[in-house]
Image (cartoon, rainbow, N blue to C red):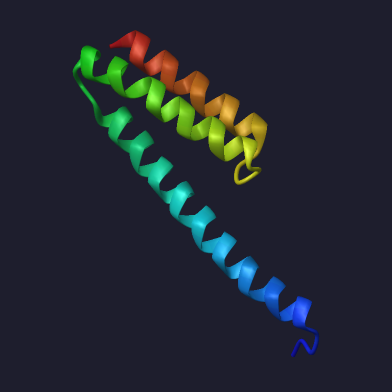
Length: 83
C-alpha cells in the first residue's frame, strides 16, 4: 500500500480519471451505434458532426488511438453518404 501523500492522491486521481474516460468512451460508442442504426439520411447527417466531435475528443485525450478514430470517422462518413 502507498505510504506517501502524493501516492495516495495519485491513486484517487487515477480512479477519477479512469471513470471519466470510461463514461466518455461508452457514451461515444452508444452514439456511434445510434448513428449506424439510423435509416433517415437527414437525421444521420445531423448526428454525424456530433459523433465525429466525440471521436476526435477521445483521440485527443488518448482514450482511443488516433488511427482507430480516423477509421471510425471514415466508415461513418461512408455509411451516411450511402444512405
